[in-house]
Image 1 (spheres, one colour):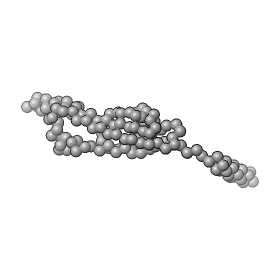
Image 2 (spheres, rainbow, N blue to C red):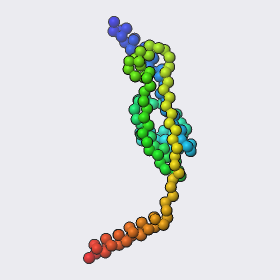
Image 3 (spheres, rainbow, N blue to C red):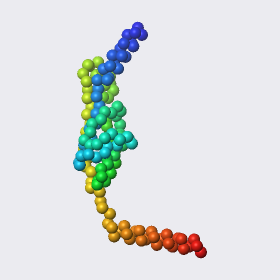
Image 4 (cartoon, rainbow, N blue to C red):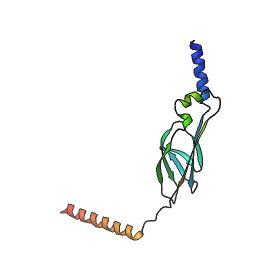
Length: 136
């Protein structure tokens, strides 16, 4: 009896491996660095496999553009929710989950040079005042 249970579990495990889960990240402009949960994945456009459903921390970076940080929710489809997923294990057909995210990066804003210089002057004055008070 134990042999049949073990064989059955191996068959189920083999069928479960038929499922492919991929996330595709595209950006405008293309060529942005993709970081998922603090792990660099590559440049957009790109597709990578995932194992677990849930939210992933997504960061896109590209020179000349503002860094974009967002949560990427990856929810299971109806066929991947119990008990449907359990019943589909006996069907020898590969089920694929494909998720796509398209994100638009904003150009980096150039700082107003006059405002930067004014703030630097205020910091300088503050430091000079602080240093003169310490000497007294």
